[in-house]
Length: 123
Image (cartoon, rainbow, N blue to C red; front, side, top):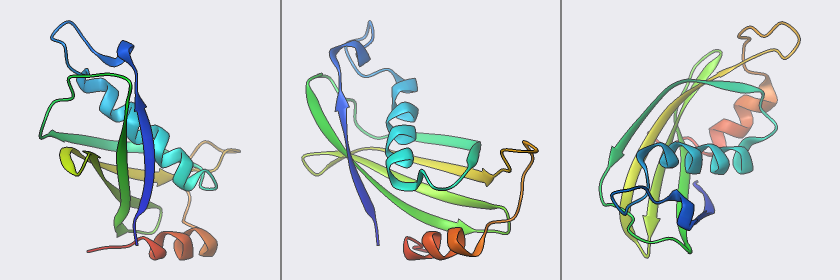
């Protein structure tokens, strides 16, 4: 199963080259991930972006599809496909590490978190 979230592309997201700045794709991923999984306390340990097609306009919504690609003991991988009108724009991959907000250190996934993540697991 995949989670889909809409992200608004603002005019201010465009850079001097007239397209959405590369760093904005990670913001789109972050906002979509928060909407999907705000119940999990986590940090990003790794992020990578493959830019497929540029976005040359603001005032549009793109679709961000999210799924889990790997589940470990205290971390999990997430893939995001960003599309506009079914055109693939970018693929983002992140590794998330669950943390204790008390100790600020990594901790194992809870049973509830593992159950949630397994609903979105695709290999």
